[in-house]
Length: 48
Image 1 (cartoon, one colour):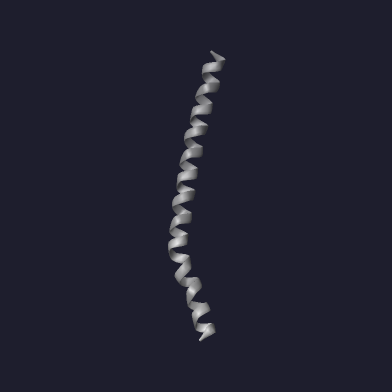
Image 2 (cartoon, helix red, strand yellow):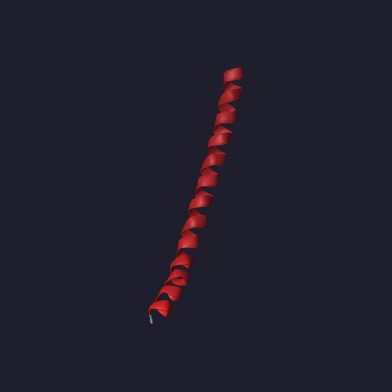
């Protein structure tokens, strides 16, 4: 009975971890979509 309970906790934690990782990846991919143009602007303006 206790092993089933532990397995249930493990499954829930696994799902939460996967959700967190997915959100993290989406967040970073969105950041990288927006960041490069913002970083390029100062570089090109300072060089010219």
